[in-house]
Length: 503
Image (cartoon, rainbow, N blue to C red; front, side, top):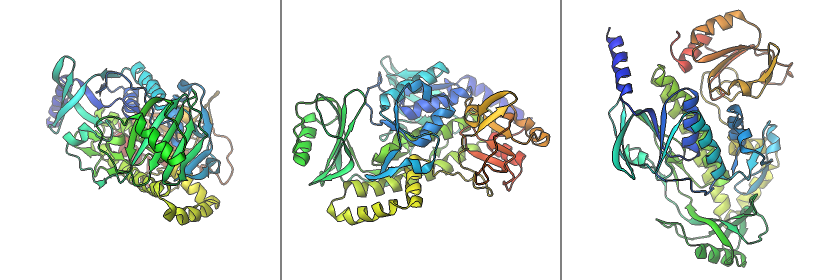
């Protein structure tokens, strides 16, 4: 009786809420999370302080892992034609991503403004409520819901939700208001970033050393040039507004001797090499994702990509808990993504030493360049900057456990499909590759959250990680939660852990 009363009380409370989930921040992380939640049917409201998209593009591409993530949600086609590349770097030292042998390469020349447009359209089509010009000024977590104080053109008001997710960037209001600890190291230097028109500059790879600092030039598709300039020893500034373009042009001339003062600045920004990571990704009913949880030197564009992947890890778990799965599932968001954030800071700080260091770092650059010549080292570093080295702890056994499922072409009856297409709905997938009725029967009580698919796979080479596998359980984020043979726990245990109680 008490359990029924509790469920009835919870249902009554939720009827009075404005949304099951409120997301603060309409950048790539917040918009991706909104879409993931709407795929699962969760009502979500996104609050964004700015009245419109800025058009600024800090990120200009996708890592290989983000390409895979977008593909599994059928989002890549929405970006139209764009360039891909196998060229990458670690701290300015060239890497060839071809060593990874992946189906996708990294994307380049996709401005963040376009990423935000695509993700906003997707989330809105799915039914997300996106409210611009709404600034969060405070919050209260009661333990069962969150009250959010919001200011907009009409004044102040309060919204209520079961969960609140801060996706509001490095200076996150949600993080501060909810009392998250954010330890790390302060910036030691300042760098400028600018997109310019009306100037011709030769491309320079990130980290190119010049006397007194480093510079970079990249050509964007519309004839714009992106530059980064960092003078060695330039002290960090606490700015309330972007730097003047004159500051950027003066620094560029001091380091390169080139005069770019006649260029038209599209936008100008400054950033530093601070490195911070929250001690927990969840406090009660409040969670953090993206730059709200981790800030670092933007080496290799990993920040936006990691934030998008945070959202994909969190979205289905939030939806499952709202749908009745145990709260403990949300704890795995912290355990899985906090370690990813920790590793991200380590590799970004290491790259910062290589990019920003002077002649005293050259011996280290020389040694690393030599090591990258070994395929195993090159593959390790390429996987790290591409997001492909991530493997979650889902249990002992087969090497694929916890890793992302490799793309596999399949035939279901007379229909051709693939593991990537089977994940488009954002649900779990039990893939039966041996027409095993016992496997399907054991999974049937979870079919409200898991699609049970009997499929035929092509004959695989003996060295394939999928060789000999007869069944695979995929989480909605594409990671392998169980497989046979190879898991040290049974299928119902895995289904209960990741998808909640059977029906």
